[in-house]
Length: 477
Length: 145
Image 1 (cartoon, chains in turn red, blue):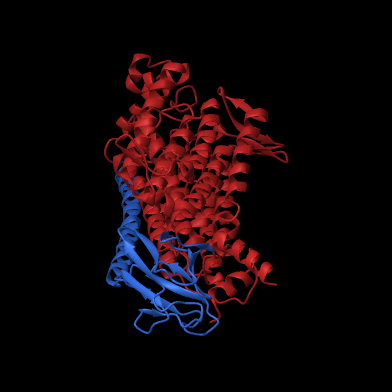
Image 2: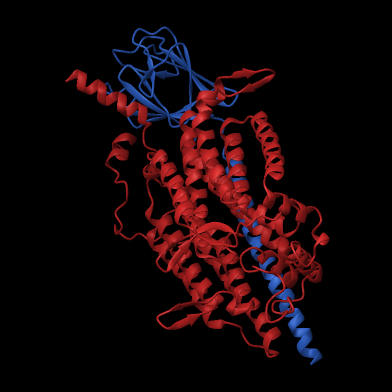
């Protein structure tokens, strides 16, 4: 073994795609995928029987393609022979399958897209996005061997993220009074979904570089011991820019998500509870201030406190969701049996993006909802575990941050559906309809897979040192 | 018709049950993984990997498991002997206190460097940081699990 450094220097930023093929079996993943397939087939049978009155599979073609894609992803990973995590992908695959069942069950005309003269309904479009997400996650998990491209250019990534937000602000199209969508020709996407990944990359890079300083030195402000303020400044600035634009764009869910992940990563990096408490207090103060200043935030809070004050107007969505959960009871009314349609539409507006949990709560009951929340917990656990086993601080923080992004987002929207928190418009990861959400979360899963590889290349040497050595060498010559 | 409803009811419960079977399998795998990690003794708070060593002692590529206090220097009584003409006999001490690593330079002739910056007295180290003593460069890494 020559030195690690020489290896790190020689390693290309992007790996050779087609090396020698050395398959490595992944039996755990295979067995879990089998279980996913059996469960989805049962779900499809349950849905088909409820809808048609005969025992037949509903949307068998779509589910067949999806399950086939899951096994193709498995085969690709076996052939690639990397020792990556075997639990995340089946868990996410299960969530995606439940999403597909739900989208098949909802009215297909909620979303229609026409390509080349053929019109595709909700389930078909969602299937295409799910396949895309699967391809993104698997490709990243197989191809990425070096994290340099993330580690090195953290400010570039941060600038790109802010630029993306500004672009949306200027050129975005307005939907329901929120300017969140950026349209590029026939494609449209929500940049905040991508921004959450970029934010984690930036925070992980910055915190790992300055962790020692943040832990060690103190600035005393009265009785409080804070980390040195100059080192906190770039981070707070990044956070404030993201948050400010998000608030201007009225995307409260994203603001809450960014803030939660920011505090969690700060805690993981420094181990200071005081920071979390200060952040939380600041957040409460800021929320109170904004509730006084902005009408739309006040409305959200009023709906949250008493949705029944205006059950047919502002509180309609939340009230209908609560009724759906109530109808669901313990084991639900069964796939396909819930949501009696009012004038040809499900009673909850935006059920496929904002309220999939309410629809699942009605049809699968509290038992099903708990299982789904459990699946998210599994993803978070894997992320924390990958972070704990990582070779250096950057990878630890990156893995933890990415897992928490998914966990916190699922929590925010689940809590919003259940009226634990005020409702904010983020998607339920892997279940909500939506291309940008699915692809961004697939990006997260892909990077987690790549980070979990036990045989991955050693972390590159710190940047300051290499610059210093170059200077030294030049003067020596 | 009643038979149909009964079977449908069973299928519905079976679907929920299968999701739980999946969860149970996953959680079993997670527990096995955590137990395996707990069984492997992680008594070492970290390790030091030698990146470059012109004199060959310590050999480049070698990885030292670190104790809470690890003295480094040219003298043979050090835990990590650095046989380098630019290293002092008692050069520096690596310590793990609380939740982070520190390097203390013991007034060595040529000083110690963290990421290319000279250490003034005591400096904090993070995992992934590079330590240079004499001409020997080493990197602090998490203990293998």
